[in-house]
Image (cartoon, rainbow, N blue to C red; front, side, top):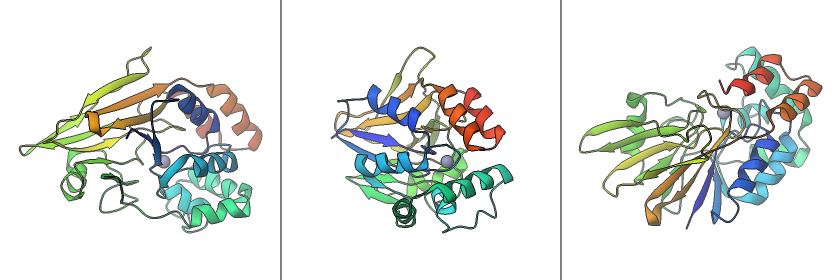
Length: 247
Ligand code: ZN
């Protein structure tokens, strides 16, 4: 079974559609690690699509804030404005969809899914020290997380924790990671809708654990079209600008 691993789509329909077109026929089941909405201009369209697409989706902090499960008090002003804008746009059934998204971690077919850290869905995992709990605590050898919008991850074998910074080079759509059966992995597919690792292309992963391969993908999309919809919607300028830089 091949899995399409999506995370942090952030209401960016253009980026999601390009990712799906690029990987047509290359996966069997799709999962989502949360932050379906927030920041981007297409919350209803993205929820409609994700609902039909995935076998499992856990909630992210922006999903909680956008559907009123969280007050967004700890969000920065720009993120909070986007969350409140999203809440106003959501059709009632899509508000309910977000409210009912399960909390991670969740296990699907022997793969653990989490939005943030293993022990706390809202905690960021940037450093090896922050990754250790997930690497050791998850019941599965391979786990995926999101939240940071940084593609890559961590591996652990023989008491050695290593950072995986494998990403597709400019001009390449994918970089393949060989999975060692004795090694534990905590992997981040990156963000579809708002990458922050310096590469503005939409990021995601395709995992084929039967054949021991995880592909990290990057695909270019029409960023200006998304920025135009954001500006027309009155979403904050810094959110519009950062899509150009992927930071
Ligand atoms: Zn996010």
